[in-house]
Amino acid sequence: MSESLVSIIVPIYNAGPYLEQCLDSIVGQTYDNLEIILLNDGSTDNSLSIMQRYAANDNRIKIIDKQNQGYGATCNRGLTEATGTWISIVEPDDWIEPGMYSDMLAFEEGFAQAGTPLDIVKTPYWRIWMPDTKQQRKLNCSYKNRIHPGRQPFAIADAAHLLCHHPSIWSAIYRKSFLDDRGIRFKEIPGAGWADNPFLVETLCQTDRIGYFDTAYYCYREETPEKSKNFAHTNTLLPLERWNDMMDVLERLNVTDERILRAHNSRGFTYLSGIIEEVDLTHDDVRAAAKHMFERMDANLVFGDNEVSPGMKHLYANLRGIPCPKINSLPHMIGLIGQGVYNLKNTGIVNTLFATKNYLVKRNRREGK
Image (cartoon, rainbow, N blue to C red):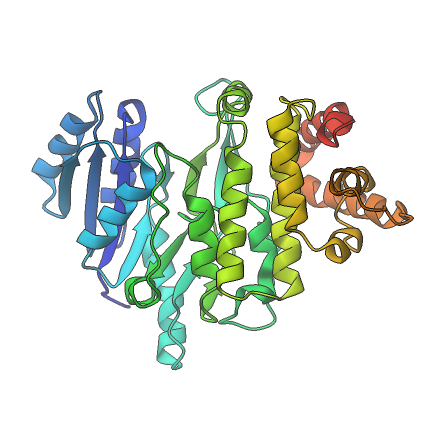
């Protein structure tokens, strides 16, 4: 079993209500060769005192107390301070299951012994749905049982489905020398800023040594619908800004594989749909941002993708001012049925019915109608 040092970066800002659960899950890992870097990003609550209490009882913990700079800059400071072979990122309102690092490193060791050491070890994660309410449930994430590369290690084009979903950069570990050699760092954006988005493509698109195994360890506390709605109104264009940042990365890296570009298009349609559920296209800034994003998508890839709904294809053509070809709706409908079957297996009947109802109620609004 590998004895590699794992540097765990925890960017913390006013996480007091959740921080003990997070830190308990880290210090309680079955793998103990850990460097635990707690970065206090100018918290104004009791987060720092909680960190200090844990550090007093565990010499693996290092505290960095600094002024508020945001998630990206804070993670970058952690990367600078880290001395481990591997990098892990844990957000302070989440927690991890005890065998996460021991299992990840055991998985990677098999490849290292075969002469193909991995740069990234990736896994699914647990969705903590409706957290801290009576309805809280632990659900599989939306790519569980879906990632089947033809070989391992693999390049992301062979498992591009990973690029369609939540970035989930924390359900992975990264070889630090890989990040340093490629100059991979976070975009330094004020606040949380969704800095994980460009980091996702920076990492997954710069190596052909990704390993994936389909066991979840990371427990991600999702936003409640009320918080998501509030975010849509207060940070309306942020998702599209990050989509453009990711597209900038793909262009800089000269990524031309259609599987990757289709996956990125899918993310763009998902982000736009979430925005116009709450802030519709009558708002000039939303309409302009959507048009700009669409202009960066290849029309042939959009119109030829059966996973893009007919309604979204019409919206795409309308905003771009180009003709929309005749669309056969049947392949998309078959795909929706397949998605429903997958959801039944993955998250159960109650959640599938909830998701289906939500989709049908909001479908027209999500397509700009």
